[in-house]
Image 1 (cartoon, one colour):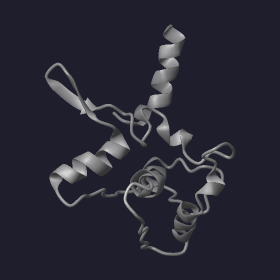
Image 2: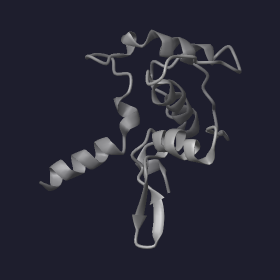
Image 3: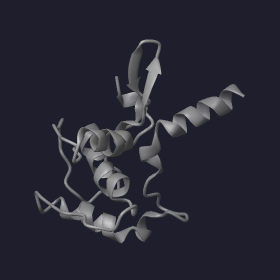
Length: 132
């Protein structure tokens, strides 16, 4: 039981590692638009990933790339821009509420309360073990 709980915890705090696998039903080569967006980062400073609602812009494109840059953890197949050191970045929404509910949730997971303190769950794209 303890091993199963630990496995669930590790998977839930390492969602980044589940994106764009080499094989399987969600394998990387099925996401050519996202891969093209990542590759364009090596050449262009600004890019736009314009797509319909609920097709993977927040997590599958912007959130994934931002996580790579913030953590310095790039997958071996990465062809986009790589930063050699720490970066400063913004993730913003139209309002405080949409910023909290969309990019903050995608990157950090929900806010959880421990007694009178609150923190992020660490279940977003940024691996929980990298958050303090």
